[in-house]
Length: 103
Image 1 (cartoon, rainbow, N blue to C red):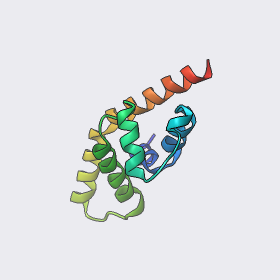
Image 2 (image 1 turned 120 degrees about the horizontal axis):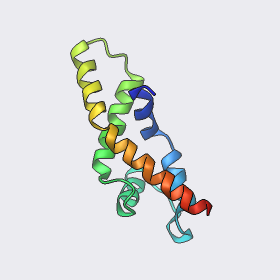
Image 3 (image 1 turned 180 degrees about the vertical axis):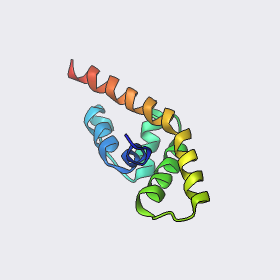
């Protein structure tokens, strides 16, 4: 899967919907993205809401902007590559939680 596609997951509502559907009823209320990310951090699904926002910003840059400057593109790709382990870790945590909920 291309790095830009992996990073694009950051800006979808999939994670927010996952949180809404897997949280106990008293935790289902969703709000602004930063509030949802803070909740995900408290639940241990992500390590840092701030880092996740940085990943989303990078995703938006890579998906929505046509980067003509090779230096900027190279930097964006290298930065994105540094976050792959974070994305994989979050995906694994969500898969484990989904598996647990399906039992």
